[in-house]
Image (tube, rainbow, N blue to C red; front, side, top):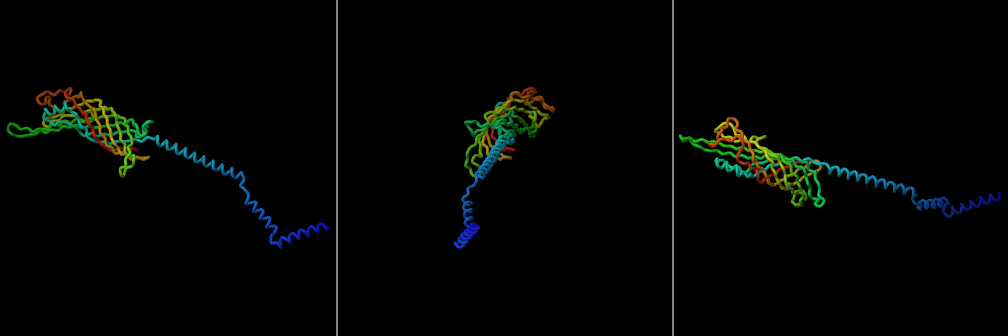
Length: 313
């Protein structure tokens, strides 16, 4: 019992001493606990969880970039169809036929209006490894119309002194279809209101076409003072070469091009059939009309200048 009393007295003495000194035992205990908490470091498990989250985020970002690159490559592989409309002037080399017209006092044919439409893929191109800015586009398919006319008014007078006129009209339209490759490269410009590489120069080194006269559009000779017509028909192969410059405005869904070009076409009809129809007279200028073949060559060869607009979609 004495030992118990002594222990209780000592505990009470200690508590009394702490109270008098202003420092409670509980305060000391809390201070030690706070110190331990503030000095405590994050557990390794928490750090591992943070690292795994970072890895997962990086993996997701990598997958997104891969998907974006795949989508971009698919879009780049998509081709755009192109419709090209153009018109211009074509000089003709009708030397042989013009001699005939001159002998008959008719106007010569030195050139005519030309127009056409082209179809083809816009982005079916291959980039050369050495010349990365050069694109080869194939094929370009086109249909073109060539107009060639000679209309002359002849004035005559009768023995009685009465005057009258006779109109002689040659209509020699041609319709053809051709294919041609196109090589284009961008050129840098600093023109106001235009993008830096919105202009391209291009070349069509050679194109091949098939042309017909008098099949779709009537090719004929008409004379106003007599009935009927003298019809012409024939076909041949032609060749062309062209170069030009174009302004390109393009986006993912729609685009257009403004262009102008010059070139040269080789096109000669050497076998033209003649057929009098509608009671056309069997003689012309005192000579019989040969209903078989035109003696003169129709030569549509010459330089071309044209311009137009193309749409890409």
